[in-house]
Length: 254
Image 1 (cartoon, rainbow, N blue to C red):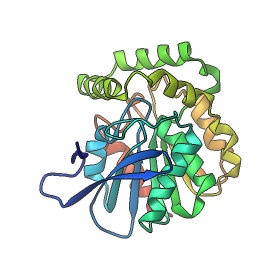
Image 2 (image 1 turned 90 degrees about the vertical axis):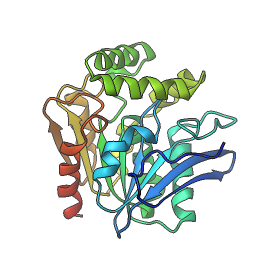
Image 3 (image 1 turned 60 degrees about the horizontal axis):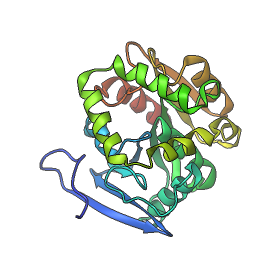
Image 4 (image 1 turned 135 degrees about the vertical axis):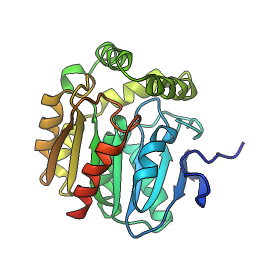
């Protein structure tokens, strides 16, 4: 089946395409107008559909991505690491002539966005890293599973439902995908990123602790840090208003 429209507001013109590069494919949904382009990169086990509220609040052209093997994007023959995901997204942006986009990553999506800033800097004009993973103090499958479970158990029902739905769609290879996420070291990329970055954390986020997110922000040359009171790891899923206010201020200064 062709990919479906999931993000664009009712009545808004939108395009949904499948893009293949090498042996892997992604799905991209695009809508909106303006010089500013926002690219949305989801977390582990998720897909672009979790960004419905965020996408509706951004002012510009919005592109929601289903990374290879997530959401509606087909499983690649071999599991992709963070760098390979970044190369696939960069190839899509290059094929569509997009430069200087604001990459908005959530959780694992932050790792892909950081890889893009290193591997294809001409495609990236700014980074927004919300609840970035992976905290080196919790870099095992057991530790991450416990943190994610604890965080989800305290989330709102709508967040739990959306997350469960996307994890089921992620398929039986989800544990291999989690391993690829855990093996990646975003803290080693930070010093190589001169692009402006905003690191955002929900104050009650169990998956991305404050000490880690502040440490990650400090590794980058042009970063700023913000916390959103009362939010957990799914900072942008239930109510994206507070994070969009931070993004608006951030891009005004780009």
